[in-house]
Image (cartoon, rainbow, N blue to C red; front, side, top):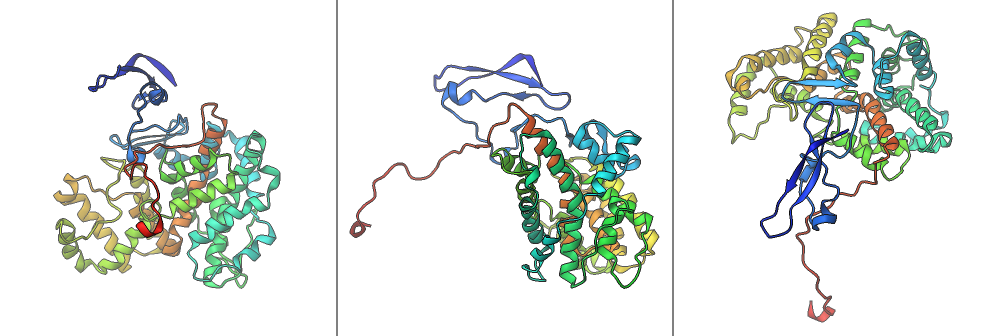
Amino acid sequence: MNTSETKATLSFSDGSPSVDMPIYKGTIGPDVIDIRKLYGQTGKFTYDPGFMSTASCNSSITYIDGDKGELLYRGYPIEQLAENCDFLETCFLLLNGELPNAEQKEKFTDTVTKHTMIHEQMNFFFRGFRRDAHPMSVLVGTVGALASFYHDSLDINDPEQREISAIRLIAKLPTLVAMAYKYSVGQPFMYPRNDLSYSANFMHMMFANPCEEYKVNDVLVRALDRILILHADHEQNASTSTVRLAGSSGANPFACIAAGIACLWGPAHGGANEAALTMLKEIGSVENIPAFIEKVKDKNSGVKLMGFGHRVYKNFDPRAKLMRETCHEVLNELGLQEDPLFKLAMELEKIALNDEYFVSRKLYPNVDFYSGIVQSALGIPVSLFTGIFAMARTIGWIAQWNEMIADPEQKIGRPRQLFVGSPRRDVPSIDKR
């Protein structure tokens, strides 16, 4: 973070003296104005609901340029990582800042693989949940409960213990997500296997059962791996900011990740791919698309197009192009091109890419549209989509948390407010109220 020679001068029309504030330049992206001394010098705060114009930290992990449609993990474009790396290589990169060499990759993969089992006592936790509990509810509870079992890695000021907690969280999330699914369908839990890759192991824990061997399909495993890479981190979004805010109090990493999962559960954040698939099911068939499109174009209808456009990416979502390729690969591999739901999705995609209404508004299919279709094709139930998202994003959360703990400028989060309630008043006696 470099201070530029120029400063920002804030002047006031009420006669208060103007103040100069430093401007910092990042490696890439907009400059930031340092307003930390604003209150001390002026007695005033800034007002920024949703923190849309506020940099809450400095970070060297992920960079997004929404206008260019660019997403970089540690400087590497997401397209190159998704094409050339697997998920655990991406995890190593996000945690350590550089891609692993062959020896580092082997060691890291081996370490994560050997931490995928959870404490046997955790099995009893699941009995306390109803069978129809939402998987995200189960994850919030079980991830938070991990802190009860791993007292040896809760000292957040010890870098080695932080690393152990990071490994445990990356390794155990797939196991917990698969257990949440198995519990909901009344099937026995499947233990992780050390001879399988990260994504293959998850597919095995999800879909195998003790009665017959589960055959791992490399195309489907690669599709899942790509979903995980594309969702691994996304800068200072709501759930990542939640993890950082929880972590700023000194809370243990398991509690912080549980807080991130709770935030991700919200439909405006992690539920977008679930909403996209629900929309497809509501449309019903290809014949109903024209009527649906007309409703979308009618502002008074209240009908929304889910899985199209993006709040940050103004032209296109770089993850969507990669997910589109994966989507078509999976549908071809499973012979699902003629399945009514997937046929409908592809027809809607075609219209959105060609209809002037969508093109002019840059309402392109986004990563949630395609990942919902892919997960459905893989046999993952809609209620578990956000759980898969949490599994992917855990590495981003833990990397951001780790960076924050090591940052000497980090303070406990304490946003300010513009108070608009009643001024001071005295409590009247009960007969005068």
